[in-house]
Image (cartoon, rainbow, N blue to C red; front, side, top):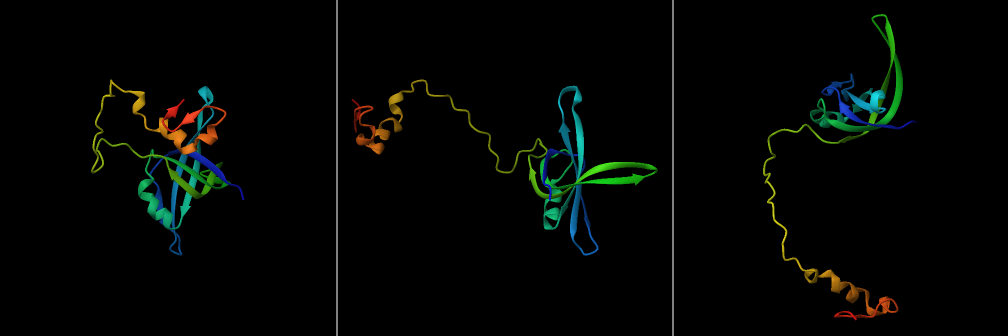
Length: 154
């Protein structure tokens, strides 16, 4: 078995169909960028997702959504209207939604963070862990490197 992983964006909304036995299957295509610079192009991967996950994830698999898919890859040859070609197909075993369409609406309960100015009179002696470390490690641990007392470094 081969396992391939492709990050990319969905080229269209996923289509959910059902087999004769009633099993759901979601079909969608992922556009994966290959190369760089002037040689950059898209590799289109036809994907199929089976079972309950197909029904559950289909509403989230919308055109333009970034995803990463993993699964068993297969090259299929096809012939239509006198033309023949090859397509890369992936039976998806793992799917990760990498983000979603951004909307102008804020989620329910969303609050803008308050901007706080940093304290101008910050003093290093206000940091509590500076003097806790020697007390936690113990003077015997640091003996020979630095003379330590519970009150601070001597």
